[in-house]
Length: 281
Image (cartoon, rainbow, N blue to C red; front, side):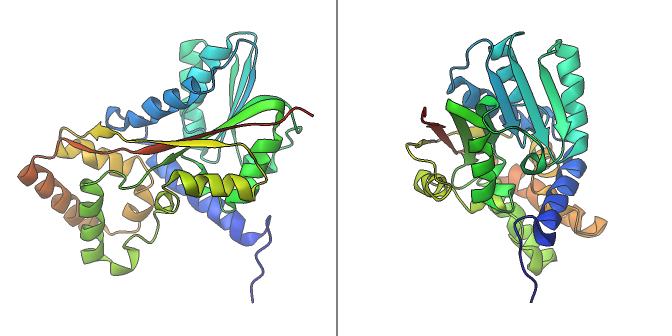
């Protein structure tokens, strides 16, 4: 029987899968159709009321949706370290930081849990839409928590229920027609979609006093092409890349036809925001 060690083979395999997924999705990750990354990344940072000079650790950072507004908020005397498993997303983030003149923002590829980051070396820890992909969510949240100093705080943002409906259901139904075994076989963002579930995770990680709120919202998908860009630039890519070219085309046609027939103009984009402050002493 294969033993699952916190730093063992299965966790490494999970991280490799996530890195491969988002390296593939990098070709569409920053398309305008996926502007929700920046929208919710900025909204997360706004909840933290960052002060000039603060040090921020942003994990599962993508191309900087939360790291960039954080760097702007803490100013030239502050520092933001953005970490992501996908080196292609990290490269895109570095280019953005350079173009924006954000010399206080560093992008670093790798697993933040394995990096030699001194406990308490940051004022703030941030993870936007990344906890779902952690192979051990409790361990990952603990690592983020211990990265901030006493009096510091962390912010975690997750997707809420019914993500991207109505098009989400259409996509998965089309996948099931082609490859039944792939139907919702990889959609970790659906594992934890309510504030109570996120607060329970904080509790398991030994984090008391966290507050979580749900926010209902929508995201525009004015064209069928917009929806397909979301599929190609997000976690759905992990399923798409397991289909043959012919299967992928049929899934796309099913989505396109539904979008056109029903005149879909927006999908649900509900989120959960959670913030916790580390006690002093």
